Length: 399
Ligand SMILES: *Cc1c(COP(=O)(O)O)cnc(C)c1O
Image (cartoon, rainbow, N blue to C red; front, side, top):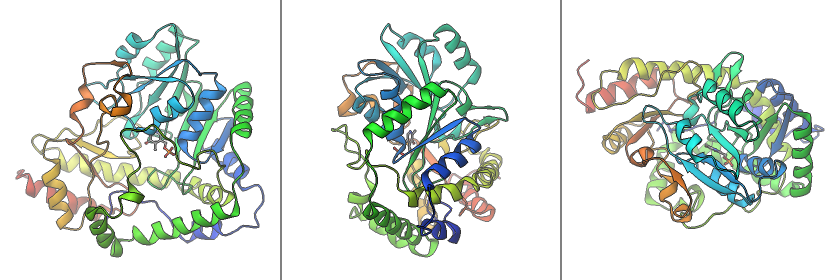
């Protein structure tokens, strides 16, 4: 069975992982990432959310309101709360999944300290809109959440270049990976120094045991996500016995992983550095597969395909449709796992019911009504066409 998400792990990554004699692995990864992101400084973290946590601390956001999308990964508000600030949610636009900046302006108060701008699923945020906002409110920090997008946008105008800082998630489901891990990039030297100080104050060094357990995880994931085995893993997943490993949040608690303050391991950094060289090829592949979906699924009634914005990096190819359950079931019987990401609306979650929310709840109707198709390196052009054939068949579309 073809999994819906999969990292592109080859022998190179495994060899790099075990090259334990290499010195300064974390710094080398940071330098490679800074170059790739076209930013002066890159600072590595054990998770993307730890990067955001330290960034907010370094920006002095305790007691401040931090505006973030209502439709995003739930770890984002968790990190905001953990850093001592208050998340204020803003709904999405109706035409795409990104946060509505007209509502952002309504949400601004005297106490607003920062805004998290997210290019959700890799679709670039409206760059000119954010530039205008920054001119109007120069004292409010703009933080780009690039966990999905990485360097989405047109050449010379990538989303991570805009604003005061950007952070990235590097776990196994992201565009590129360092097993777990996260990164922050900035151009401003003073801010860089503050972030580095915060990091050395907050984080403890990683142990050899942590490296070993990350290595075991890497090998297990490479085996489990292999096409030949994935059918069995998927069966186990459906029975619920894997919940302990795959369910990553509990509605009622705001928490961070137990090791979120333990530094990224050098082993993970070495894997990340190899992946930096693959970034371009990964994104090209995602764009190619996405263009097949866009071209072939265009006739399906009731499908709202993702915007074909230039510079989209397609961390996920997400279709709005009321038919997702049926389609997921049908494709699963034919060897293709599709998904339903993001399957919650944060302001409705128990932990965030009391927080401020701006907007009428446009994004509330998406959980359960979205369908993601695989776009990773393991999904070939042939797979993409088979997926299209099956979807056209089950939706009775004429083609
Ligand atoms: C994955 C992700 C993050 C960060 O994730 P970590 O698991 O902490 O590395 C942040 N924002 C979004 C939108 C994400 O998808």
